[in-house]
Image (spheres, rainbow, N blue to C red):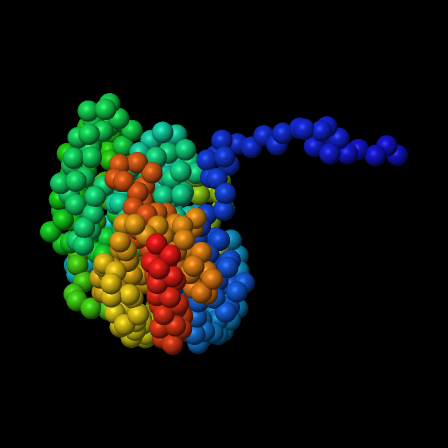
Length: 438
């Protein structure tokens, strides 16, 4: 029998031809690298990986949901079967009702229908599907500078562009958005703008929420600049449930009277369990068919059993009990990390940060001369001390606002309070070593 070898083994120098999208995606994202190191090296204190608090994961509620599902054989069989591309109807209904309650709307005021709700494998899958549906190579998504770095990489992987808009401690600045759109129009690129991305509650990485008086302005600007095609707003609710201080704010979506401009995306990964991988989206009707068609090609519907589990949790009120517990845990951790920063950071340095009122992150500004990047002296000094952070440079869009290399993001979710204090102390030692070297 003749032995057949692979072409790459028999022809020296044969190149592996990848798709353009594979090339655009680049190497492993920094999030993957940091998460892998966090799991592989338990002695390293990770203030980088966006994991949730491990010991608070809802084992008891999920176990009880299993019992309820197994108690009825026909229900259990249905849970183990394929679901629909849109998702498990009782879960979509439960989420829609939560959205109505969160915004304080009556049933009449809440214009959305359950058929506009789509369940995905985490919110990142929905963000990817939206990008697939909206963007051609070279198209533009406007984002805050800084912004969610995983989303920035996702857009790049499709050959599209992220263009930064200035932010402050009240979120995206409407006037800066207006100026950026005007600039793009002058350069003949307005038709390339397809969406505006905003994490409206406790943004990753800054922990900042979009101010209440800027939300209607954002929708008005998107409407006014939608001249030859609609410019969508992607409103990310990933951290809305994780509020530790202050009153909730009505969403950007409530200001979209037409219901055709704002896309809402959310997830139960941070507020319940990332292992279940359940995200969701509330879509304008014009996007339902293209997004569901793309999703159908991808997965025939997200994991049905996980959706049944989560629907059971929501229907029995266990989710709210879990979130109440999480808020108390994270509120203590916020106080711990802020106290540690005040105690350990070198007083001679001009360091600025805001105590977050929700979410999982603290955004730290260091003096401009301190490079926080992976190739800079601070990152290596921090690794040597046994602590990790996310370099701020990854959080800035490739175009628009300048990339700032003297910021870093700290996550307080995973370590316990003792390790949080120890992690900040290690970071302080790394900072002192870098400053002394300079």
